Image (cartoon, rainbow, N blue to C red; front, side, top):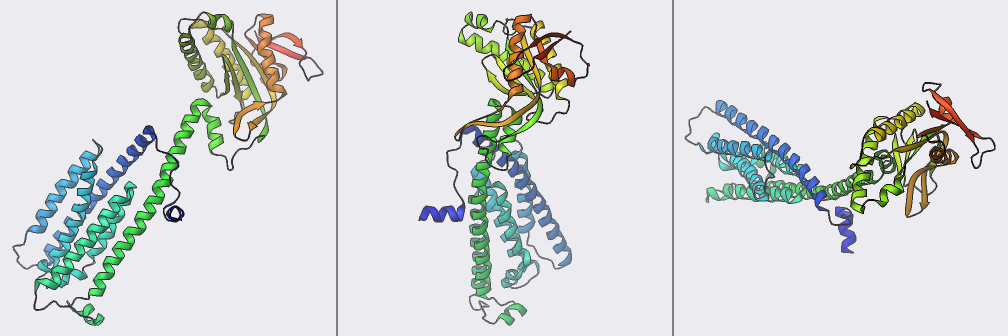
Length: 438
């Protein structure tokens, strides 16, 4: 029951302990918030100083009271120091707490000084509209998304105002100036205790509401950071385009969800991979493949391709399947040509890895396949199978790039090609014409 009430008031808690790297991200954002708070405090101290100077000009009476300008000067130094430190270090909690206390102490001191400034009874300052700045200081703490500072500001304000009220009714024991007449209270320097209690209740309620709101927002913020981190991690295992598509979907992706698109597919495979892998340790092979995939990934990204699948040494690359690419056939051929050139002209961990490519253009299905709790976002269909078949066909003809008739037709002869053969493909009645760049 209490857990349900807590979830209703404060929102659903974060379901897991935050990983260290997530905490680091949150701390970095909190540091940015502290800089913003420091700048707001800097603006407020300038405002307080300007108001005090204006009050000095209006009040022409001579008074030796110099506490306020001294306090303003001290707080100005503290605020500037805090602002500079916020750009250099993560401000410790004790310093942040002192900052909250100093905010409220300065404000209460300014309010208290009004009756001396204007040579009025102490009750004069209880009607000062400057009390509204209390709510600014409390709200300012919401920028950090930590309710303890909001609570510290609210409790300090209530205690400070209680002290000011106590001072009014005790400074002249023979005349506490307390009244129950609201009109007299509004038209004189009399004190209406109920009005002062109303102010403190208002401060308490604003503090409580802001604290609850920040706790709810904090939990939502933590979940958002977790989800963003998960999406960033996901993009390391699948392409960033696929991760974006999954995380931005209006509804949860279900098995079988997909769409038909006109796209171009490339299958790549390393020539003689089995022989290469047999002569290496697992660590050497992993390093070699990492260098290889890193270099090929740069080529693929440069031409707008998306790596949809890694499987051993094989890559499945799509164009216009996950992200829009109206010139997908040409970009696929450019990618294959550059992959072949990179593989031919450089080594990876000291090993040459020549690469074969099979390219095909046509209608494919893009979507999720698998079980309800285990999905793979991929492409499938007849034209995907043809691209895989063309990649394998390179072995028979000693070529490194083969493309289907649809791809060849789509580029309108921009790339000189020769007809290599016509091959029968499973599921097709007519043989498929196969081309290779000249």
